[in-house]
Amino acid sequence: TIIVEDGTNPIAACINGVSVSLQASGTVLVTTAQINAASSDNCTSVNDLQLQIQRLDPLGPITTEIEFNCADADAVTHHPVKLYVTDQSGNESSCQTYIVVQDNVPPTIVCPPGKTIQCTDSFEPLVNGTATASDNCQGSIMITYSDTLAAGSGATCVVLNRYWQARDLS
Image (tube, rainbow, N blue to C red):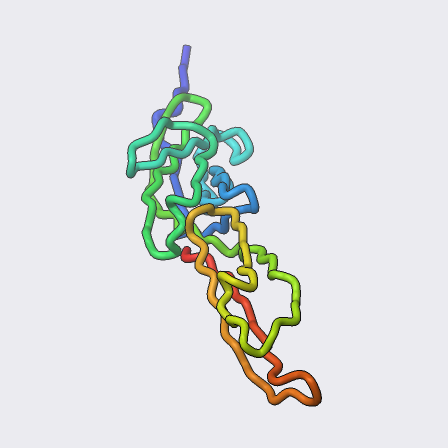
């Protein structure tokens, strides 16, 4: 009797760095398919290989997907992950790459309504209304404004156009 066993590890191949963008929820899931670069095996077909992923910093469980969130989204940090490839005989190999998480969802802004005030009244936003904003990553919004003045006519002493902008800091 001749018994043939597969003792060869599969070839784990990772994409060299992957960028992902947060969704409106402030999270994004990274799956094995996003970091796998055609891992293969000598006996097991590509479709039958078991692929799993693990976050390395902080160390997470070995699973099929990793969730990143607003705290990870600075568009600079390389978050290391490991891809595990297992064939049908239980042979395993791995490779390592990194994920860069971006927050490309712009904040939404609600501007105060336009109003007419007396020439001697304060132009300050705290008196006349301020803009509000929301974002998928709360706590990271900067609201600024700029004013342009134009000469008025008749009973209008001046026209103030106030332009509001909301920026998230990620």
